[in-house]
Amino acid sequence: MIVDWLPTPSQHFLVSAIALLVYILTSRARDQRRAPTSAIAWVLGLALVPYLMLPLYLLFGQRKLKPVATPYVGVVVEGPHWAAELIESFGLAPPSACKVRMHADGEHAREALFEIIDGARHTLDISTFIIGNDAFGRDIVARLARRAKEGVQVRLLLDGFFSILAPGRFMRELREAGAQVAVFRPFFSLHRLGPRNLRNHRKLVVADDSHLWCGGRNLAAEYFLGDDSGTLWPDLSFDLEGPVAAAAGRQFDLDWNTTPLRTPLRERQQTSVKDGELAQFLPSGPDQVEDTAQSLLIDGCYRARRRFMIVTPYFVPDDSLRAAMRLAARRGVKVTIAIPRRSNHRLADFVRSRPMRDLAAAGVEFRLLPQMVHAKAVVIDETLAMCGSINLDLRSLLLNHEAAVVFYGRDTIEWLASWIAAMAEQGSAYRAEPPGLLRDIAEGVLLTVAFQL
Image 1 (cartoon, rainbow, N blue to C red):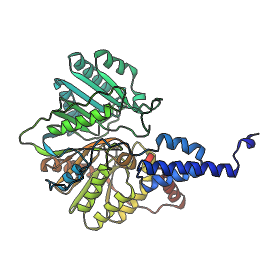
Image 2: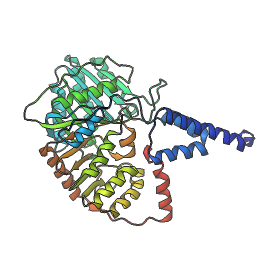
Image 3: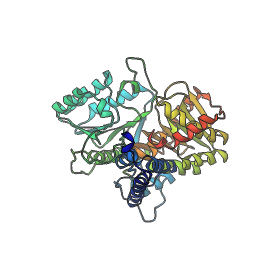
Image 4: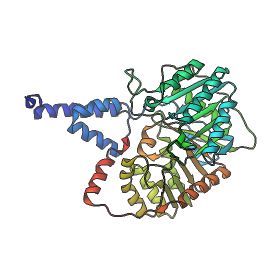
């Protein structure tokens, strides 16, 4: 009988105790600092259903990996900006002068991307979360294959989860042309590659250590000019020339060396430019010594004096970032957050309601956009802006491998501020409504697992 297979209460208690002991020991030994909601979710799951949750924890529970940078432990010399000092303290490259071009729309982004691919002379490194099975994806693959045949060293790094959806003919075409293709933590691989839930969400194209194309766009039609069904998601990207490209290239090398195609790290050659504006590369993720983007945003909330502008497709901040935003708004900082009324992730839309109600009560202005917007950018006062792949949700800020560039030049800051303001004008004002009992309970339950959404 099935009942005979069920554990006795004492057996269940013993398994639960072992599961919780594994959680405590691994968390302590590996210094796995987790958000309270994440910790609560794991503890409850391991206590109630240890037979299911213990294997999942062993596969997906690790949040921090061995850092790839060494934090600065001496006295940080006062730099050009508080954010630059903070980022350097994480062991990351200092700001440098770069020539920056923001992309006004998908057509401009496509032209800049093709220009960098076609202009590469020696090396071309591409990291992407998604490569579309569409006309745009085919065009990208054909261009990369042509450059590889022309003698350029082409390397393409795909995320392990979404590489499953990439057509096999794309990979064959690239490899036959002489390009190298690697997959970051293949989801179904039996090799020990680390937790499978830590996705590589970085979107980078680095050419010759001197040019960088970056932002929130995946290499698929809906992020540029629209797909065959008419889907087009407004997004943000940029390209630049300068030492920031070499810093991004170094991060690509470190990511590449987590795959079986690892190669000896080489010294990236920095290219200096004249009459540029200061910018700084900011990688974020479990391979960094701190939660770099999260730390920058929290510090920025406390330092902001006039405005804090955000555009993001998903909004599920943790308690510390939400508290910092709330206090900034109460101090009189104009906090504006532009998000889609409906994104492509309905669960994320559901769980965002509680932090939105809390922040709206403190004076934060939410603008609900009439369409899905995939852009990710932040502007703080008139002195700092950040743009890249980082969403303002728990998974993006605390779990995924992400990348952004912090800009200190007034022209780029004002360009991004104007873009966010124009986007926010298209949206309607958010009006918080008290939730019913069932919704309130459902929000609380789902927020305990929001770090995986």
